[in-house]
Amino acid sequence: MTYRRTAAVRFLLPASMFLLVFGLYANAINNPFILFDGDVVLRHPDVIEPQGLTDLWFHDARPGEPSGLGVYRPITILSLHLNARMTGMTPDPTWFRVTNVLLLGMVGWLSAWWFGRYTRPLPAFVAAFLLVAHPLNAELVNHIVCRGDLLAMLGIVGFALAQRRALMEQRWTPLFMLIALAFALIALGSKETGLLVLPVAAVQAWIAEKPPTDERPRRRRVHYWTLVLLFAAVSAYLVARSAA
Image (cartoon, rainbow, N blue to C red; front, side, top):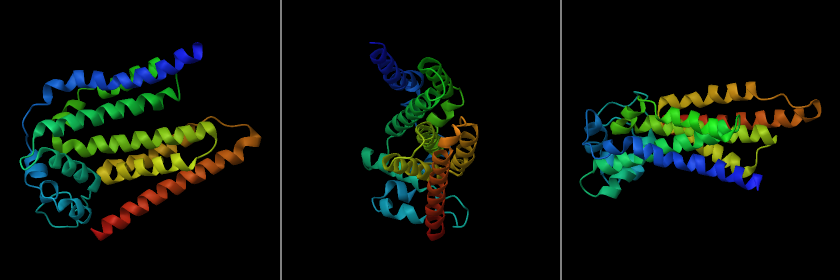
């Protein structure tokens, strides 16, 4: 009975994050496009035009500007493109903000799971909720142009969670290697701040509990594969960015 209760708490607390996030930001969902949202959504050909699904991988994130600016955010533009396809010929800001709220909820949900790998479920949930309830997140929800920040946060937290699981179990499974690689690519391909996935992974590896002497070779293999995953993600990003 104790195990079942603990399992239920570990699931219900993170799942309730979505309800709390929607409660916090529901009043912003119907706001119109503001400030730079028009440039990023309404006048961005890779967002509003059907061929953008293939073109966005080879263009800078800012339309109408010379290439070489280093603003390469294909994952962000892809998410905006899919939003635009959902709303038809005229982009509707409601669905863009609903997606932003969902992404923030996912950041809180994954953060709760990640923090829960270090402490009990309730304090982990409270810490994650304080993270998503911070007033600065109102800007990330209201400004569609801030989609990249949400996706970068999602990628960083997702990779950190997968890495923490590998450190605790002393091994990387093929499935979680693919998941971690996907999260790293999301972080790097969403915004330049996604590079924080590298120091976050380094710090988490450094503060990990020291295993017994006979288990240290397994821990070294975990660190080795973490480096391989990050190197693969950074290499893929740099190759795509060079081709853009």
